[in-house]
Image (cartoon, rainbow, N blue to C red):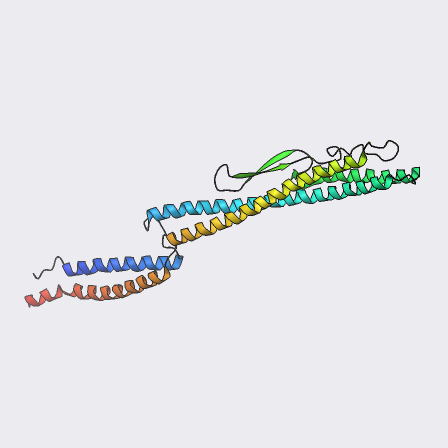
Length: 270
């Protein structure tokens, strides 16, 4: 090999290899410290794009699960109010049977009617005041859509109905001076309306619960898939870091020796 001063080929080669070792070591340290195999697009552009889509879906589904749980809470709130209305109607039925007794005096019937009127007022109060997050759930017919997916159109509808003494056909119910015709039949019809709505609410609660379970399973699977793409393999990265450290130490030593080579040319001048 020619003895030259201007260009130290061995030094350049050693420096290039040292830079490569430094890059390997730096990448391993970055991955170990962050826990991520992909820290920027340069690490794996396609993998980053796929992982980003997974992240978008995971975040959307996580919020969708919260939405579904809100739907469950709404249905439970409504059903709880309906249960109180049902209790009042059941009591009215009991009082109606009590009133259908020829041994009752006029004052007895008035007392019974007073309690019935109080029960009807309570039904109307519950209907007007039952509220979920600012929405009156029993004071008007309405359909609420709950987003339960990460994409457009993935919704579940809750159909709410107005339930008060008028809708139940009991607003003019009377067992005293102007008795209602077929009073027990009238009450049974009202109870059937309540049962029908409670049944719908129970069914939609079950659907929401099933949806939440499915969403959670999907989120777990997507999270596992994302992890396989972007998370660092610590065993591999520790091995790479150790290798990089050894190569860096060796490269530094070799570079120091390569830088001394031109000094040997000076001996030719002595």
